[in-house]
Length: 193
Image (cartoon, rainbow, N blue to C red; front, side, top):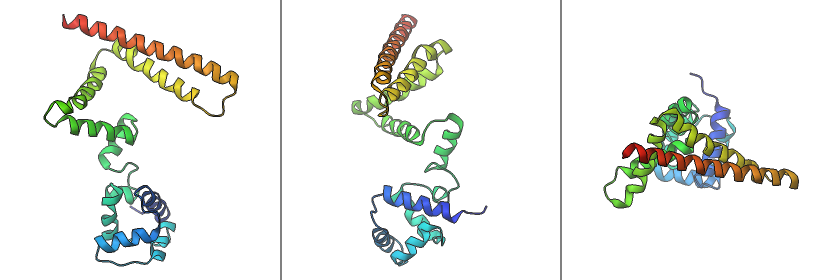
C-alpha cells in the first residue's frame, strides 16, 4: 500500500488541533516527553504539509493523545478505530454515534443502579431494531422525520416565510413521533399481559 503523505499531513494537523496542541511547538514538547526522539517545530511543519513522513515510532506515540489507532493516522481508515470504520461501512452510523453506543455498552456493563440508564438505553435500541417492521415504522421513521424537520427549522438562512413553514413541519413531526412512541408502548404493554 502506498501512503499519501499530504493526506496524512492534513490528518496530523487536524488531530493535533483537536487534541489541544495549539501550536506545533506544543506537539514537539509532547513527543520529547513521550518518545526518545527530539524534533524541531519545522519538522512537524514538514509532516503536516506532507513534505516528509513522520517516523513510525512517533506516529505510534501520537496515537495516545489523538485517541486513535495507527491505521487512522496513516489514512488506512476514516474512523479512529478499524472496528468503528467497519461498523460505519456496514450501518452508515457516524463515528460519534458508534462511540456513544460503545460507551453506553461499557458503562452498562458496570454493576450498580447508577449505571442502569446505560443498560436501559442499549436494551431499548436493541429492542427497537429487533421488533417487527411495524414497530420501526411506528417509532423510528417518525423520529427520523422529526430530526430532519428540526435541522431544517434551525437553518440560519431561512426567510421568515420558510421558517414559519419549517416550524409547522417541525411541530407536526414531533407530534407524529410522540404518537408513534405512545402506540408502540401500548402494543408492548399488551404483549406483556
